[in-house]
Image 1 (cartoon, one colour):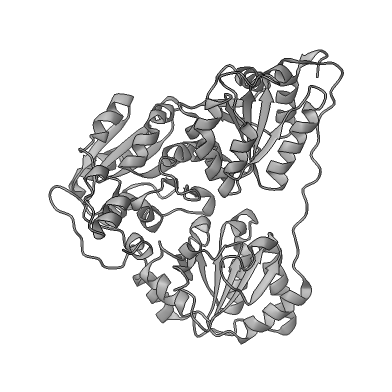
Image 2 (cartoon, one colour):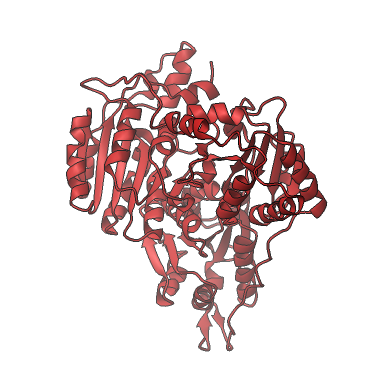
Length: 554
């Protein structure tokens, strides 16, 4: 690095040396120089139309790639606009570094001044700061280390005067300390769990985000084959075991009828990198009263936090699965429960999954059943795709019906349960998977909140299919409060013509009330699915999702 460089220029080069390749942001005076320096250093800058969308793009990109991913925002309102996306990333434990411009040191009278650290910590993210020119590189290294090694969303405040200061000297490259190795479980805990496995008649392996991050899929499949277990995932592990014939898919509110049955029949549930939340267990209903539960996680506070467990193992998912395989091998345990894996169970899984289960189709000439719409779109679109979903009443239909080939192909922005994060998540997922078709499921309310960045998807030349579940309302509130006798007109709106809006941005679009209206989508797919296509699905507003009615009873 040259002599007499600004702090911003030196930090930008440091970030590239530490692995940063992509930054999502919206520029203002307080973050322009660091962003300009990043571009000069070779970082690709993705300009968003809203800071909250920039943060959600980065969240999805980081989950899909595992790279050191950057967000750049202006001080004050730039950070406040981004804070919901930052909160989603923090709750998801996404390794992310947010470069937040800040007012010059001591400028508390500036209009842009806020207590950035307090705001950041309030949503569960980590607050860091470059304090002085002399400490800036050490401050940056600490922030990057916390993001990558501790799997934290870190906001690094960069006061303008410190960014502009000169750094003399050679400034040798920064180096991260080696990544800690896999956390291996206590051998005695492994032995006790192996004994429980040997006694089990109907074991189930349930995997979550921790198993995805651990790259434990193959080890878990080998363990399941050894012990005759069925497989399932939390919503955060969606896509694991996608092609396995013994996979039940998602456990919990978005599960299939057969998943509910077979999970609740299990006498031993082995949870790898999964939190046994009320969503994953249907408020405990999926755990049989006499079932034993084992939880394996790298974070001790998570063990037994959501519900009591009989076996708590502190360890990495892959390392623990391999330790169990070795212990079972020493004991001579091999598929002790073949009775559960038979032709009858295989047929139950196939006929009872979401795509084959029967339901009363409530479509008519004016509106379409969202389940019917979802299944039809899944059939039309190429199978090699990535899928993102916004939050909202509709959100369970996306993972139920829009299939994904692997867990890195799925991004469900549900950790904060904020609507409006779906479109930027789909953009981040698309950028992380160049050339692949990105599919987004969104409600009309959430899409209206993020619609400015439809321009970004088109400007970047992304291949994307956007499926709007349009019932002209905030449907969660409609169904919940209508059951309680409230008037719900204050959460209902005139119909929005999203197809016309999409065409105004430069996308192709179709208004869909019946299956026949999807002909334009088939034509687009036949052309190779170029650019952005929006489906304005006019869904039946009287249908309440079963998972919503069950989780939010009157």
